[in-house]
Length: 71
Image (tube, rainbow, N blue to C red; front, side, top):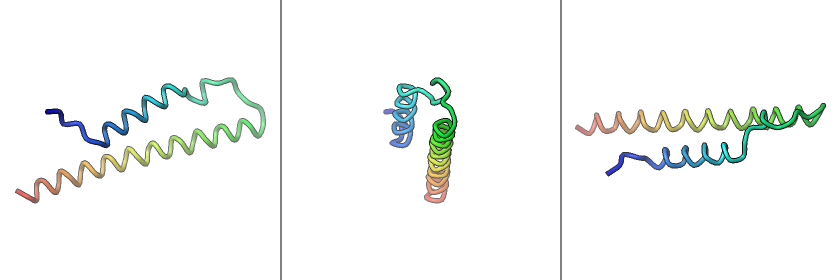
C-alpha cells in the first residue's frame, strides 16, 4: 500500500496543470499596464503556491506529532 496523502495528490495535480498552462514568463512580454497586470498575477499565483506548500508541511508535522503523542 502506498503512503501517498491527499495533499500529495492535490499538489501533483496542481503542478501538472501549471506545467500544462505554462508560465507567464514564457510568453512574449507585454507593455505598460498589461505587463504590470501579468506580473501581479504571477506574484499572486506564487504566493498561493507557497501558502499551500506551507500548509502541507504544517499538516504533516502536526500529524507526526499526534502520532508520537498517541503512543
